[in-house]
Length: 448
Image (tube, rainbow, N blue to C red; front, top):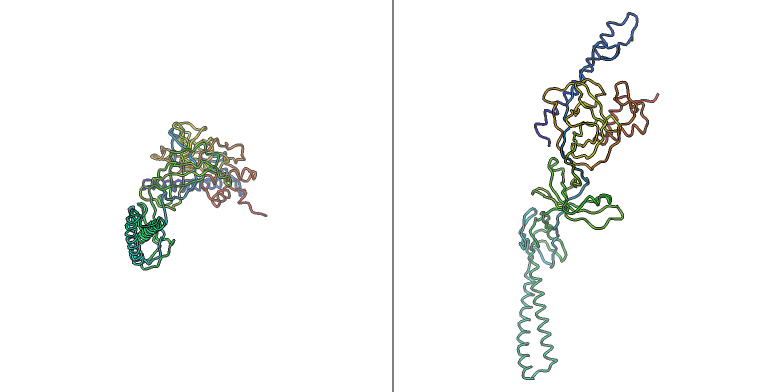
């Protein structure tokens, strides 16, 4: 979480870069001055070597870095995907009769209860029709009463009696129908929820089937996602998950798997999984979310900050603080969770790895760890990523005298693998090309 206590670390990182640059500039300037002082007369351009190298008069300046300890703790793997929130109960209320709007009781954003009146339509015509139906029913009931007496005295034929009964039943049905139609002039909420949309205006003439309001129940909210067919064994009902949203990027909203569709979509090779989300009173239908479904947890894993991974290697590399120098290590990665990553091999618990300043290091570079910044722990996870199996080691790639990768001597395949590693660390294409150009890579070469 980005808090105020993290600001000094950012300023410290900027200071590291500036200090390193100044140290290198100073070392180069002093080396040039010493070379000029000892250069025989008449031999312009004679080199005195790099500072600290064979022919240099003094050791290279220590590079200031920040380190964190390799710690042992639990880490989880996740299925990572996207989804859009939707309500379990959401409906458009439509007009069942044709009439003008004479009263609006609610507005958008208002919470309503089940059965609450939202609006009224003009009922004068339907009320008159209902009165006619009621009077017709009363008359039919009186006729039926007399017909029953006549039948008992055998003064009415069966055919006439049946006609009386039919007229009574028809009058009853018509009266009930008119009563129902009259009831449709009161628009009521079918369930408790929120008025999302009001489609109508006061005095507007509405017709049968015309939408009037949209009502949505935000509790619970659902998030349907699509997972690949290969991940079906990893997901089951009740499984824990969480969501992150752009509106609250530093907060996790708990969720659980509510249902799993039993069939696979043959067109996409995916399965629909529906999550039930804890809204905490802030989420809304239609929001876009990053979804992380937890699949496995390792409780005794070696974990390091993801920022410790070097960008200038084909595989996964970190630098360990071995006394006052940096030691390059090839590591094998496991689960990745937020800003942390599991290390399967290459480092041991308690070792200090460089988390800021490592991109300018090579194997054996002198380093300086300022007091108070050398015992940082691995970062807590902020966002999850899908789990990863064993990672390729950095392999045998061309390197310069300082031990760093030599981009100009790499094959196109090796260079592309280095670029892919940088992309996985979050660098943009412009940043990648800038790094390669700065190291004298192919991107910096100009045609003759």
